[in-house]
Length: 446
Image (tube, rainbow, N blue to C red; front, top):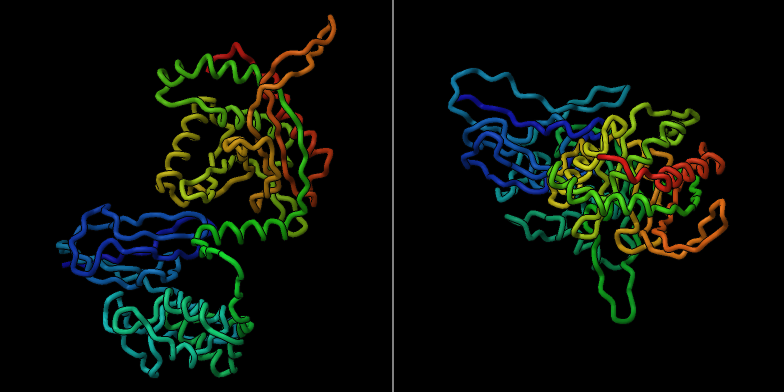
């Protein structure tokens, strides 16, 4: 029998670790090639990890909620193959520049197994529990007193969060010895040694709310979105410009062509690919909009990868990316938009689908808003929002005089990083997009 190592897959250039959300199989279960073994999450997207072999799941090396580095072995599968398999991939051990440290190998305790103490007598805690303890200023001696509701009394995430919410007074401060002890236990649990972080600041007593209130804990994605938005505001000097566009020609063309488009191409034509087409044309004219900032350097991106903010059924937001949008015609853009949007809503996006964006568009008009002031999607330097399309009476200027007509009007707004995008460039680019939409050729083909 051969043993195949299943490793945490690479999920994108900037992603170094992932959190295990759920195991679909347990040791001893039969697995098939490409069958989903577990669900994982990064700071960008949730993904499924398929089996790379067919056989029996012999060993699970990490439990749910563990944070695992990319490339680490997470499970082993016994197959009927007679060939010898290469030696297991060792997990990385991180050391400081001035010393060499070897991590002690601790046998893994899978979920449901009897919890045993480590060789030094300290109880086993998952990295998630230890991270929460560090953030809340709970030292090891205090952590030992928390009763666990997990298997064999193991402390779970729910246990420690409940303890934090009911704890009264100020949390005790780490002593130097306790801080080092906590860091060593966390490092051993993850099979790696890291430079100890500064002791956590003591947390205050839980806030008491008066009146009739409901307290809702943020889910993982909402916490990530909140953190991303705050960091964006702290990073970029936001300025927002506004303009209005007469999109009557575009609306009438879509109404005329949508049935034929769907019949011929097998996909619907929405406004989004039409907006993206106009944005791409203008980025080519003003390439500085398609850039990022690295210290005192401006990185102008030659690839035009358009992110499109997409609302999920649970109310959260995700931004899948259309890679090389400038190389796609309208049909190609429509198919990409619909495919990414469907995958986002059905939880089928891959990690790479949200990486590499260079400019973002968000449609705030989807829910009826006339306009918005969007927050820049870091590390980009601009984001454009389109509002709801409304019929309005508009003054039409002609060589024979002015007249009033009913037109389809839409507001556009763009937030940009004032560190490198001045008001003149920001407003010029936004006006150029509006003109592209306003001068849409109503006689064109797909």
